[in-house]
Image 1 (cartoon, rainbow, N blue to C red):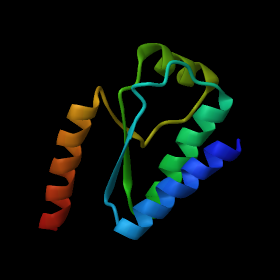
Image 2 (image 1 turned 90 degrees about the horizontal axis):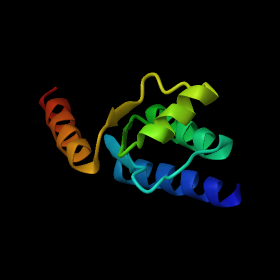
Image 3 (image 1 turned 180 degrees about the vertical axis):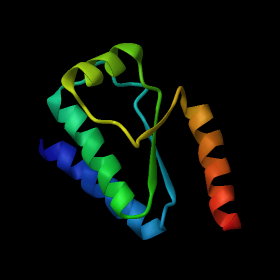
Image 4 (image 1 turned 180 degrees about the horizontal axis):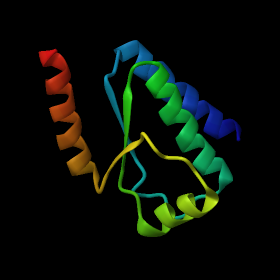
Length: 101
């Protein structure tokens, strides 16, 4: 639990310091998910949104996605992409479109 809190604080601190518009969270290496991991993902994505950053989850495995859904994790509003490469491409386009505004 302490390590999870450290991760949340580090991600949020860096996002704020760099004024990140987009933060990629790659979960490719995540083999399984429990309540703590699901809670962490949700907290980070919500907190990033409050800071003005868009979180994009990449690399979600089918079994992890199934577990999150069965746990009732509400990931509505969270952008996802199949892999890190497509997440980077999407983030680049998103930042370009935001810069045009």
